[in-house]
Amino acid sequence: MNAQDPAPKGDVTKTANIVLNGKQSMMPVRSGSIGPDVVDVGRLYRDTGCFTYDPGFTSTANCMSKITYIDGDKGQLLYRGYPIEQLAEKSNFVEVCYTLLHGDLPNKVQYDDFRNTITRHTMVHEQMTRFYTGFRRDAHPMAIMCGTVGALSAFYHDSTDINDPKQRMIATHRIIAKMPTMAAMAYKYSIGQPFIYPRNDLDYTSNFLQMCFAVPCEPYVINPVMARALDRIFTLHADHEQNASTSTVRLAGSSGANPFACIASGIACLWGPAHGGANEAALKMLEEIGSVDRIPEYVKMAKDKSSGFRLMGFGHRVYKNYDPRAKVMQATCNEVLANLNHRDPLLDVARELERIALSDDYFIEKKLYPNVDFYSGIVLRALGFPTSMFTVLFSVARTVGWIAQWNEMMEDPEQKIGRPRQLYVGPKERPYTMIDRRA
Image 1: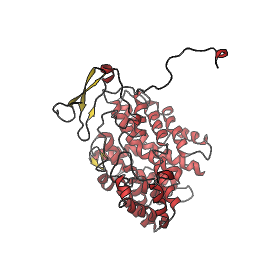
Image 2: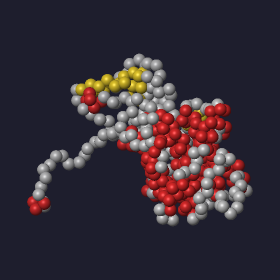
Image 3: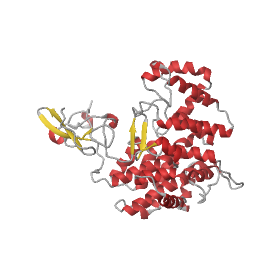
Image 4: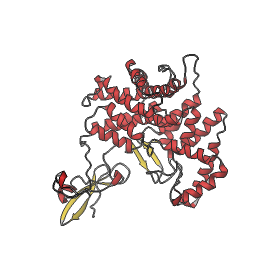
């Protein structure tokens, strides 16, 4: 491949020349505002008769986006250019939602108007309660979320026209507002308690906590430290570039599916243990280790490939440095446990594992740094949530990222229906044989 002189950022900066079987393709090389360049292979097949092969699309950019940027080598995460550490410390989840949707931090009037809109949309249609009673009492909350979120399109017909910008925004506000209500209903149903209606006098995360933990027979007092911790968790998980569930939402949306169906598809993808279930897996690992004195045994197993054991909550497909969200989560974990005056032995295990990971040559060489899932499970358990709800909480936070990405896709003039190609390795063409003549 050869390159010409670079052009301005955000446009074609150079071209790449590839020759296959005597056929040549000159492909544009595009540059973003930051990050690596990408080779636009859109006309490769037309020019050469060949496709690219990239299992998992780990080296393929499937879209242009202005929403989230990750630099895995630096351990950097930006929402619309704003560092995640600053947003987690100084902002709140509702403000982050506005920023992801609109591109900039809101002014006071914009923020108040947006917060009021979200607050006024938190109730769900009363007939939705019948969907919950149709599930078995012991149904997994994520199974309930997949079904009920997809069913929203049956109740809100006035916001399913994807070609109408106003309807798209109404659907956006509805899905962000109603997700915590529906998640709390899934939790209440799983433990046999009555549903608690949202309260317009509470902020987003405080409202979610009262819908999950309040009961009709006595008042529920919001712990501000707990509410702030949950708000940070939501902020840290609001978006994360083109991960599996976000790509699923975009792929579903590329066919013209309504936004509620697209978000349901994201929830289904997030349910996978390799994606949204990582914090639950990390917590189970800490419980298995049990105490600090057993850590060397498990570290030895982690280094032995034949053991089949791997440390959960360490390393990341994208981050090759310390996950910036993990630093925030560690501080939040300490705040929560100190407020509860509760000593969790799993935190001692987590701290020692972290110390080893940051000093042991094996972990340093393989860049196995603690990620956000390492501490979030401890925090969620301290807040009172069972492990079955961990991925549900993830979906509540990630909904804004999904819907922001969906909106961006709908406004992209280059958007096409998703249609990956394949490298076929099955049988070549062969004739049909009658059943009485088959061996």
